[in-house]
Amino acid sequence: MEDYLTKYKDHTVTPQTQQQLNQPLKDDTGFNEGHEDFLKMLIGKLESGELNALSPSTLYNHAVYDKLVEEDQEKADITAMNLMSMIRQIEALWKLDQSASFQIQNLVETVFQMKSKFEEKNGDVYII
Image (cartoon, rainbow, N blue to C red; front, side, top):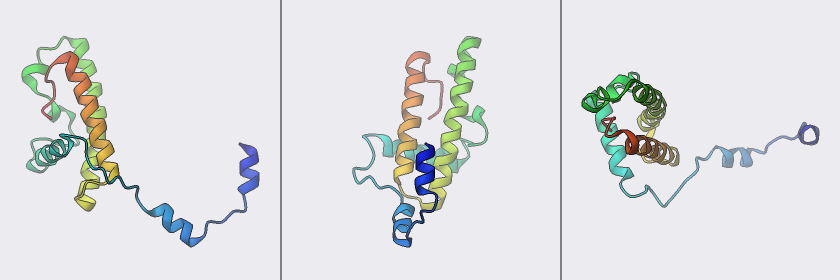
């Protein structure tokens, strides 16, 4: 590691290279099947106020959550905090551009997979 630091300590990036580095990554393949609808539903719930990105408790389907044993509720709480962290990022990126950027696509994929994996074991715990 130190060799790299020594080797490149005086290196400067050209303006052209910096411009290339500043370009966001692009994925022309778009969303996986169903994920665009998932994003629209998520944004709709955020805009309507049904889901508050700063309040994980708004994420719960209480009819299912309240029936979980305490250990599973704790797991649901931790998962909800992680989901809401990503949902806040999605919301912030959406407000900037309102397009399905590469970052949003990856975040939506992650939220979808995390939610699905948890709900496979515990039922329809979340409203998304």
